[in-house]
Structure formats: structure tokens, C-alpha cells
Length: 312
Image (cartoon, rainbow, N blue to C red; front, side, top):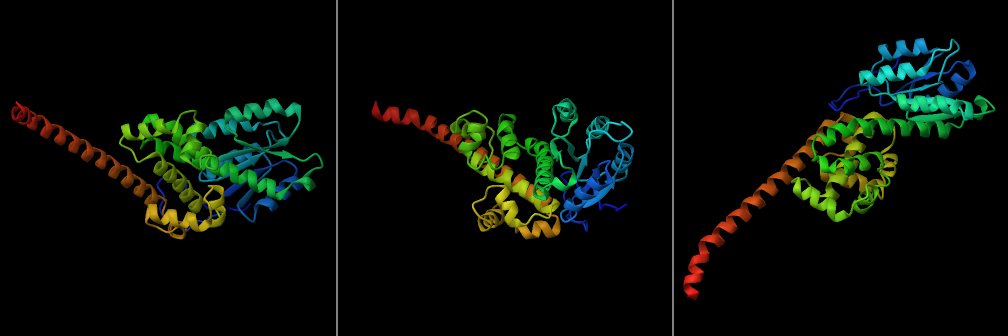
């Protein structure tokens, strides 16, 4: 059995010598199907094969920093995946769960139960067996599941830094980066007007909604850079930047670091720190503006009687 290098979850960042390939456990009973799935994933992931739910549960304990699990709903002994997923969620581990199951009405209830437990994506087993597996589809589902996991990881960290009135905006931007290209897009996605977002940011002494949207996308990009083999070009495309050069320019302008530096040095923490600095600057500017307005009102109040006496 192949060992999987630990994959850093959480939001502490930091440089390590770990592989950028995500660790993936494939739990499929049929040996040929399991080998076919593993073969598709090996160019982009560190793969461990498993033939039983019991073995899968043991691997989760041995490899707590695993990136994703692709598993059938049950094994040959009748043990179900649901209890393993629920236990993992209770522990709060950052693992992306993907079901591998037939696309039949008989399995729909099982998949619904797995979704409630925490499974986020599905790879449907081809009716013709492993020969019908599409490599591009399997890899796309894995990438989507991992990206969703990164969004969930970031949600708590970003929401802890912004006013609660902005949480719906942040949530939509994190989970729908290609649909939240502009502030108008994000506002439409959560059912409010752009001006409402502007007012909420102003009341919270926060960076403006456009800048906040950029920061959310850059934080996602930093996680992708640290945690995947995706090229910078692919990351720029997945986050709907106009071009890789536009992504590189925005990344450098906002964070002070090159995207390649974040990938090489594990600099996600640096990007998060720059976001904190931007928030602090916005709050300081709001305080100074408020102080200036107060001083201006004070001067007007003092000057008032003098002006009136002149008129009189």
C-alpha cells in the first residue's frame, strides 16, 4: 500500500516539503474498477487503494491530512460509508468526500443519506464497468470537491474578519467564484442591490465590496496554489480572471507576493495577513474620516454665533 504524504489543512499555512499532489483514498470493492480509478488519478494525486470500509476508517486515522476519499456506499461485508463520513465530520477533519455509485433509482435514497452525512460529490459508475470511466470527468469531480473543501475551510476565517451583514456576500463569492465576477453578480446572487453592499461595507468600516470580492478570490487562489498541482493558468481560469497575466498582476498588487512565491514557499498565511492589513487600513481610514467630520462640525458650531452676530 502506497503511503500518502500529509497534506496541510487548516489556515495556518507555512512552508513544508510536502507534495502538492492531494492524497486520495479509493475504496472500491472490485479490483479492476479500483485499479482503473487509481490509474486515472495517479497523475494528479497520491493514491491509496482500499477494498473495505473498515480499512478506509483505519486509513483516516492513520492519514488525518488526507485530501479526498472516493468510495462506494458500502463494501462487500455490507458496512456502509455513511457512519464513517459522519464520524469524520464530527472530528472536523478537512476531507472531501466523493461517492462512487451507479446512477439508478435504487441508489438515489442512499446517495441522499450520504449527502446529509457530508458527501459533496458523486462519480457515477458506468453501466459498462471500468472501461467506461472518463478520466476527465473523474479528475474534474475531484478538483470540484477539493475546491469546495477549500471554500469551506476559508469561510470561517473570512467571516471571522467581516461584519455578519457581509457573510452572505462572502459565502456566495467563496462557493461561486465564477458566478461572482463582479459586485453586481454577487449582489444578484444573494438577492440584494449593489448599493446595499456598499452601505453594509461602509457601516462595517470594511474595504469596499469590489476590493472584498478580489480578496476572497485571492485567498481561494492562495489555497489552490498551496494545495494542488493546478497551473497558475488553470487557477486563473477557475477563478474567472480575464487572463493569467491579469491574475498575476492583481495577486502581486494586492498581496505584495508573486503567485509563484506562494506556491513555492507555502505563503497562504502571508496572503491572509495582507488581507488583515487591508481591513485594518479601511477601519483606520473610517475612524479618521469620522474624526474629521466631528472636528468640522465642532468648528461650525463655534463659528455659528460669530457669523450670526456679524449679520445682526
